[in-house]
Each structure stands twice: as structure tokens, then as C-alpha cells.
Image (cartoon, rainbow, N blue to C red; front, side, top):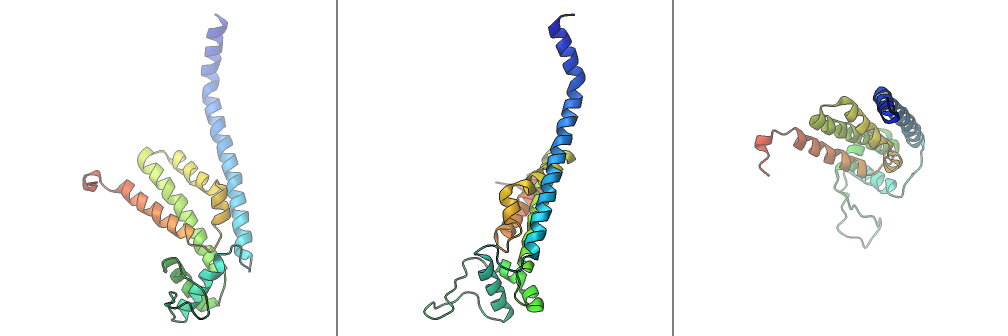
Length: 184
């Protein structure tokens, strides 16, 4: 038996173990990333003060909605000099919590966290729809949550994660839609 044949034989024997080992290492690193995601999120949820410049204006909008006021001011010649440059869905989702518990950041952060988890779930469902591979779907959802931008932005009271959750939900609907009805 030549050296080349021996190497091929050993490669055939080791290949399944290497593939399984790679999957195990990937899942270990993704599990560590999930732990870091949870720690970062818990610290952000428990922080009482703004973590980002855009959190306070959204809490202010929720407070105005809770008081029955409009968040879109027709005249900026008198205080408060604030603008509402987003649609009202996110401040509306914060309004019941502001009405019940007063001005707070945790409600908006919790909404953003739930939207982040929903985005990861929708991405996993999209991958599963096309591949029928549960491992690939779980890895997709975990990889999304491991992205540093997602880790840093998910616990902020900002509209971004709600927009992303609605976008990925729309993509999932398109992925599941019967091909006959697509008509695009």
C-alpha cells in the first residue's frame, strides 16, 4: 500500500470525526456567545439610565402618547423642541408600560430584546423552510444573536429591532407562501 493510499484510508476514517468535532466546537462557541448575549442583555435591562442617545426621545414619545398627546408637533417654534422621525408603532408598544410604571427604559429594552429573539427565530425558520435541516436552522438563529452589532443593539430602547423583526417576519411569510400564489 502506497503512502497516498494510506493517507486516503486514514482520511476516510477520520473525516466523520472531524465533521462532528467541527459541529461540536461551533456549538460550544455559539453557546458561549449566547451566554455573553444574555449577560449583556441582563446588564442593559437592569440599567436605569439611557444607554444610547435615541432611547430618551422614544420614552418621551411614549409618555406623550400615554397622556393622550400627539407625538408629531406641527410647530417647532416653542418648546419642547423634539421631533418624531419614526412611525408611532414602537412608542405605542411602550405606552402601556409607561402608563403603568411611569417613565422607564426597561420596557423599551424588553420589547427590543423580544424583537431580537423573534428575528433570530424567523431567520432559523426561513433556513429550515428551505433546507429542512434543524441543525442549520438553530445555528443560523444562534449566529444572528452572536453578531456584535446585534449583541450591542438588541437591548437598546430603539426602533431598529422591531423593524428587523417585522422585516424577517415578512421574509418568513414569503418563504412559506405557496409558489403558485407568488406571482412576482
